[in-house]
Image (cartoon, rainbow, N blue to C red; front, top):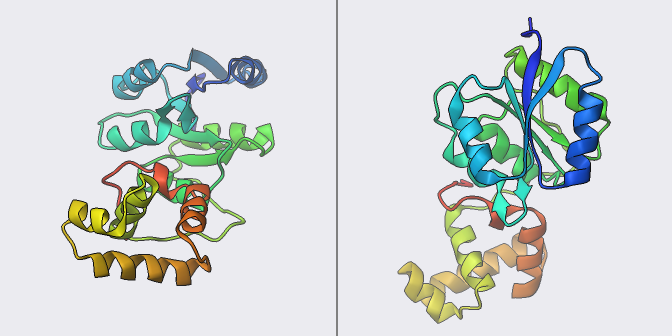
Amino acid sequence: MIPQPVRIALVDDHPALRAGTRELLEQREWIVVARVTEDVEEARAILRSGGSVDVVVLDLHLGTSSGLALLHETRAVEARPAIVVWTGYDLPTYRRFAKEAGAAAFVGKTAPLGDLVSAIRAAAAGEGQVDMPSTRAPTHISTQDRDTVKLVVAGLSNDEIAARLGIGSRTVELRLTRLYRRFSVRTRPELVVMLINEGWLDLPPDTSAD
C-alpha cells in the first residue's frame, strides 16, 4: 500500500530534464513533485530531513558534485527517504554501489518512463530493493588495487606509488601486471580508461570492492 499522494524530490542537474520529468510524473494523480533541485546541499538536507518527502529520485552526477557521495554519506541516516537512483550512467559498478548504500531502485535514464514510475511506486510502498539487472557483467577490484590505479591516474611512478601506499615497488608492479592480465589490457592508460568507463574510480574512497 503506497501513501496517497506520494511526495517526491527530484534531484538532477539538467534543467530541461528536470522540468520535463516533473511534468510527466505529475500526470500520475498519486505523485506530487514536492521538491526539485540541482543543489547538492539542498539534496543533502532533504535526505537527512526524514519525512519531508517519501521518495528521492537522485541522479548520480550533479555537475561537479556527486550523488554517489550523497548516497554513501547518508546511508546510515535514520528515516532517510526511499531513494530511486536515476542516472545516465548505467554501470554495474554503480548498480552494486547503489544497492549496498540502500537505494530502493536503480533506473537508467534510457529506460522507459514507466520503469521510473514503477520504481517510485515500489519505493514508496516499502517493497524492498527492486532487482537491479544489467546487461553488462560487473567488474570487481579490491580496494588496494583501486587505490593503486588512482595514483596511476595522478601520474605517479611505481616508486612514488609504493612510497605513498607504504608498500614495495615490486608489489605495485605485481598489482598492475595482474590487472593487465585480468582485463586484457597492455598499458597503464588502457587500464585507467577501462576502470573509468566501469565507474570504479568515481566511488567514495572508503567503499570496498572486496
